[in-house]
Structures are given as structure tokens and as C-alpha cells.
Length: 438
Image (cartoon, rainbow, N blue to C red; front, side, top):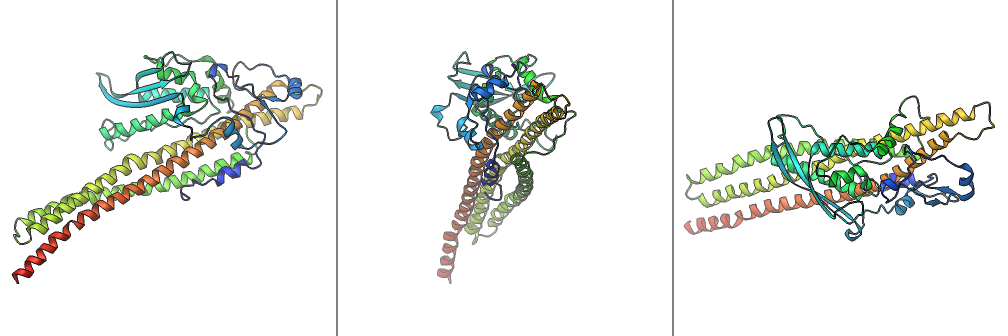
């Protein structure tokens, strides 16, 4: 676990000395959220803020007399991954892949089943069919409308032709699991799960991907167009630590993925040898009457060992590698959110500097500067909350992954040991028979 970077050191290091804590959007319907990045921002009133204290975008008053760490954000937003199933009100599964063949294209659809008690949905249960490009549309819309949040990654769309058959049963099942995990991560998120695009994806029979939600799109555009003309002076220490950790984690994931790929290749080659090795003993036994039973036993042993190795190789290919690849993509998503946060901070620093060096110092701070500050604070709060959530998910995922692989390896060697132990009685019988003959 230490080699995979699943310790708490980066998180604790970033929590220390954190600036004032702001809560994220909270578990509310997106229609009710007055987000600082919304196109319909209301004019700020500095006087009321000074009199009554800071008010969060979701209407919650904040006590700024003491500093709060990112862990307090986690508790305030109820981002605990150990929530009991009974407390959740949205359950989503991806199942039943089907192949569709038409004159123009061939593609796979998946059935998306939803069960919920939320009032935002008209019915308690839904069942719709979606293809990969629909999932891709959903993720793009989430990125546009929720730019301050970490959007879970999708499995890669393109595969190398001639290397992987994208219509094979193994590939389709691996993709189904990845799509199922993507939707579950979105459904468990206290903000993303209330997004209107997510609602439409789960409930609409015919998904009209051309229809846009103007308000949400404008919220994303306000960040998208920040990219030009601003340069960040220095990333705050806690977010710099996030970036350094992601760079190190990328190296670790790359190394482990390369080694795992090599192990799978070597196991596959060894499996081919075992499959050819066993029948040799079986054919040999037909010419050796005295050694018939032991040779058949060796042949059966090789067959059992090859079956055990095949199961182990499949487990690594279908369970181990997809998790590694998901987190490689997760890292890229997190880096993109960090980059957006830096861009918003750079815009704020530039505008604030222009005000400071302005000759006429009588007017108060312009509202657009205060709005930029709100964007930075919202980005900081949402990013820290999502980072904590990602850390919790990572610890759970890799703990389950590594213990599962350890169990699979133990089972593999137990099966091989049992196969070889089955030869002992045959050899003993042969020795006894030879002793009686002599």
C-alpha cells in the first residue's frame, strides 16, 4: 500500500494551514443552487457581508473567526464513503450489453437501471438503453456545467484494431464494469448526482443530446474563457502538494501497469507451453504400460495447473489492469481541475493588482473582482472536498484490489499444490508394485 501511495501523508500535509473553509454546493437540486459561477450572479453587497458574516452560495452562514481544515468540509458535506446503503436515495446499475448491427454501423448498447426516491424524478424506477457515446456526452456536460468538481473518468473509447476485438465478450464486459463504476461514482456525489443532465441521462427514453441547459452551460463557459491572458504567480501550498502527489502517483501507476502487462504476457506464454506439455505425457503413457498411471497423472496435473494459471491471468486482465487504467485517467481529470482552478486564481490576481495600482483609490473594490474572489473560493472548497473523496475512494479501491489479488494468487498456488500432491499416491503405488516384483 505504501508503494502505491495510499497513505494519508499528502492529505494531512495539505490540510495544515488551510485558508478559510467554504462548503461546496451541498446536497441540493441544481436549480436551487446560486453558484458563484452562474451566469445569473446577483450583485454583491459588501456592507451586509461585513455586518452579518460570510454567506455561502447555498445560503449557509460561515464562521470566519477560526480556520477550518479540508476534513471539516468533508464532514459538513457528508462525503463519507462509509454511508450505509439505507441512507442513499439513488441506485444505478449498468447491465445487459447488446450488439446492434445496421447498414451504417455496429455498436453496443447497455441497459441503465435506476431506482430512486428523489423528488426530482417523476418515477421511482427507470430502465433505458445507452451506448458509449451517450456516456461520453454526459461526462462532457458534467464538465461544462460543474467546472469546479472532479468528474469521474470514462474508459477509453478507442482500441487498437487487430489487437483488441471491441465486440468480444471479454472487452464488452470489461467496458460494462467501467461504465457501471462511472455512473455509481456520479450517483454517489452530493453535487453531480443532482445535475439535470444526469437526470435526463437516467430517465429520458430518447436522449436529445442537442438540447442544452443554458444556465449550466454558461456556468461552465465562465471558467472556459478564463484561459487566455492570465498567468498564475504561485500555486498555494496545499494545491501545489496535490500537483506534486499526482505527478508521483502517475509514475507509480505507470510502473505498476508496465510490470503487470509484462507479467500477463509471460503468464500467457507459459500457459501455452503448459497446454502443449500435458498432452505429451498422455501420449507417452500409451507406449509405457508400466508407467501408464503415473504419466497420466502428470498429464492431469499439467491440465489442472494450466486451468489455474488461466484463471489467474484472466483475473489480472479483467480486474487488476482496469483499476490501474481508471486511476491513470482519474489523475488526468484531477490535473485538469487543478489547472482550471489556477486559471481562475490568476484572473483574480490580475484584476486585484489592477485595482491596487489604480491612481484613483476612492471607489470601492469593483464587483467583478469580488466575483472572481468568489470563484476562487468556490473552486478551492469544491476541489478540496472532491480531493478528500477521491483519496477515500482510492484507499478503498486499492485495498480491495490488492487483497483480492493476494487471495487469487494463494488460490492459484493451492490448486497447483493439490494437483501435484495427487501424484504422490500413484508414485507410491508404483514403488510398492516394483518392490513386490523384485
